[in-house]
Amino acid sequence: MENKDIDWSNLGFGYIVTDKRYVSNFKDGKWDDGELTSDDKVVISECAGVLQYSQSCFEGLKAYRTKDGHIVTFRPDLNAQRMMDSAVRLEMPAFPKERFIDAVVETVKANAAYVPPFGSGATLYIRPYMFGSSPVIGVKPADEYQFRIFTTPVGPYFKGGAKPITIKVSDFDRAAPHGTGNIKAGLNYAMSLHAIVTAHEEGYAENLYLDPATRTKVEETGGANFIFIKGNKFITPKSDSILPSVTRRSLEVVAKDYLGLEVEEREVFFEELKDFDECGLCGTAAVISPVGKIVDHGNEIAFPSGMDEMGPTIKKLYDTLTGIQMGEVEAPEGWIKVIE
Ligand SMILES: *Cc1c(COP(=O)(O)O)cnc(C)c1O
Image (cartoon, rainbow, N blue to C red; front, side, top):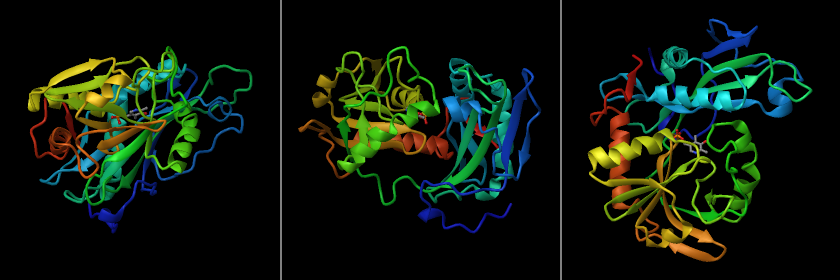
């Protein structure tokens, strides 16, 4: 398929309408067969569960063009499973794992012309999501749901190299113990908007959220997990209220099996941060954003890796994982799903 005429290297992270999207409806206790459609509009009741009580969850993954011209995606089974977990917690019907993966493949194939060329740094972002579509006024789960997937090409996250960012310790909390922090629910993002707008106004790129119960431990940012490097150790916070990032879980394997680092997934106290060498934020969008500085009410933690470039170990992690995703480094069994 001929690629669309898009200036791939100057794409941002925004929404561009592509040709096809996938839709399946849940009604009378079951999912229908699902289909691709050209219609990018959603028509639902004014009283739909998602509009009244925010019953929705989503996923995010990417399709990549490899050097040899294939289109691949990365560990879609983990996104499928995580979306099922999110649905169950929100009293929504789970969309079956195999159907999720098939629907991702079908949607990407139908939009193959929007998969950016190898080497452009751009990718095709894939957004599966689900919401309560039937009317709900008394508080309860909806009876009907819609599962959709759209795709949109996104540019290289870092134009001209990854510059370390400065983040702040937020005065707001993200997720309570036993709350919904561990699922990918829209509501977690709705409540983070005021905090991120505030941080941006103050000149910070992101918020570091502490655990709300004791405010002594590092949780995550609004949309990325933390990784830290200390000597030969790869350290990442363990908590029931952080979102299990596919990128972070993959980096743990890369750290251990490809780079020979010692991986520690454990509680990370804010007090410890001053002793760490490197810090990064990880998620599908950027893979890893290096953090140069963390500011806590005027007290600064400046990582030895500095403000000019990624620290050396995080750079190796970044290069290895992106190499795996783009087909340049051999992937562990089952990580790469070839679409075409
Ligand atoms: C999506 C998300 C991440 C990153 O997860 P990936 O699977 O790596 O994209 C991290 N934290 C939160 C809160 C998220 O919503």
